[in-house]
Image (tube, rainbow, N blue to C red; front, side, top):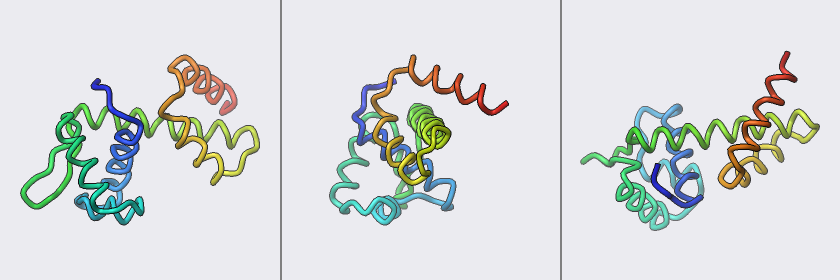
Length: 124
């Protein structure tokens, strides 16, 4: 996978989430979802396109490439696992989700494996 910045991962995750809610994802949808400015989103989408993470068609519809899809899914799964972990130790869901969003980009794979193992044990 290419080395993209944390902000790029967040945009990929946003596209993934929006794709599940909308028929088509456009830059304006990301603007509305994130609250970031149109120029910021436009720049980010350009960088993600250059990195081969997304494609944008003539109508402005944004789709994830296979590599972008894999990166978005990885970040989203980390987010879900971290949120579940934080909730399991007594943190409210809103705080857990906000903290997960910050940590999901920097946590080691070793720590994620242990968190997933912990969650599997506590689900039984």
